[in-house]
Image (cartoon, rainbow, N blue to C red; front, side):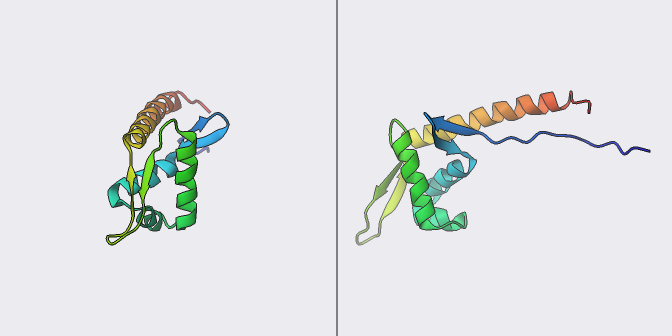
Length: 115
């Protein structure tokens, strides 16, 4: 007697700039958290990653993008901060739109699987 199993497909999307990783799910989450908190430090803490790793990711995105995606302001009396630029917001939006289209395609195709 065989047990009927439900199969599905999982995927991960990366946007590349030439051969360099530019944007993926984790980086989008980092940008969204920076936008929400105004801070790379707080965004990193929320994702349980080091500030160094978060800053490295931001730096790589800024270097890969035609326009910077995160602007960092230096500390002072009120402390420093970070802002997701319009280019960064557009990158987030385009990533989500593309990911949703791919997810819908995969969901539709998965229904056709006959394994």
